[in-house]
Image (cartoon, rainbow, N blue to C red; front, side):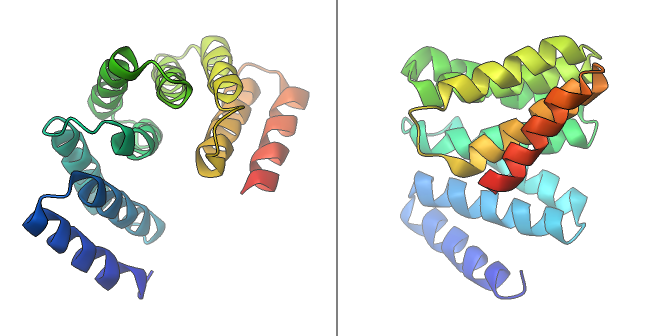
Length: 175
């Protein structure tokens, strides 16, 4: 992460200068991941909020999907309900506009996160499973690993331990 941070900051600065939304979204996402890895939760949350704000200003929704999907999980695992729901709402808008499998999968993933926050592990497991089905024709291994991991968590919370282990092993293999 020591080598990644300066490159991501340079990328973010350049993206803002030339107003390239895709590059800005992806650089902010990279910085959020680096911050989370280093335990800088507040800084990671700040990058997630900048992703939320930036997607609103662009017509190019495709590049916002993976960062918003990741931010939804980040906020949910941090216990940040408003952040989780804001990302889920953004993904709902994108899914409504785009309607393609990647967007619909991200929305199902986000609905799984909100269900977990609401204490509905069984409903969450169903949403994460739907997210995985929708990813079958999409080349998105990082997203697949995250949905497998979160499906495992939801299944474990609902007492379905064997299925949970299967999803966690699948997440590990994909990662």
